[in-house]
Image (cartoon, rainbow, N blue to C red; front, side):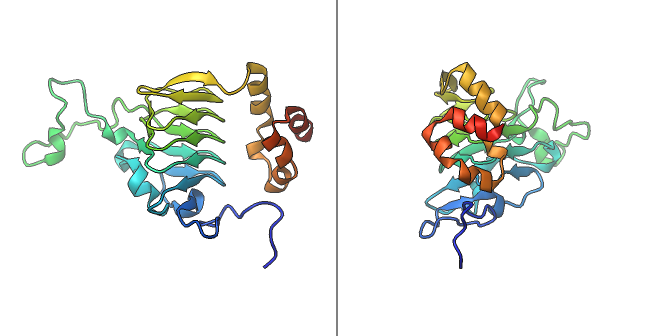
Length: 215
């Protein structure tokens, strides 16, 4: 079989020979409320095939929220995406979900999605560290890094490094001019062939070469 000159096949669920713990999620996840971009991978010693069961929690159809993950993201083992179904109503005197047990505790007027925070959106080229927790409705910008065991309860700007509980942006990876340029270039949306041709600039931090390639 000829070797590709344009990178791995994004539809190959196990792109690393001899490393079955790494999987391209687009090829492994088939869920109507989850969207995952090319080349985003999950690394789990127990295997990546059960990403949804292990990592996406309280994702119920009646909540109508989506998990959207961009391209070229790296997701470490133990990451948890907590979806809106985890929320309990706060409008009464108790947070206990009586209605879900029925037997006289039904609530025909319940609006299960009331107070939901919307879709959880992870940008492109995002690195999420081991055991990080992403809470409902959060948007993580392109190029961000989420530290190990961070609990992300609010939006993370593009190219920020967020850590802690609750997570805070402790620094930006680049200056504002560089971030603006990278967001404008958006190399992660390029065809695989073009990315391959410009890997030296991406890996070597040559912004001007990358800018020229994207012009």
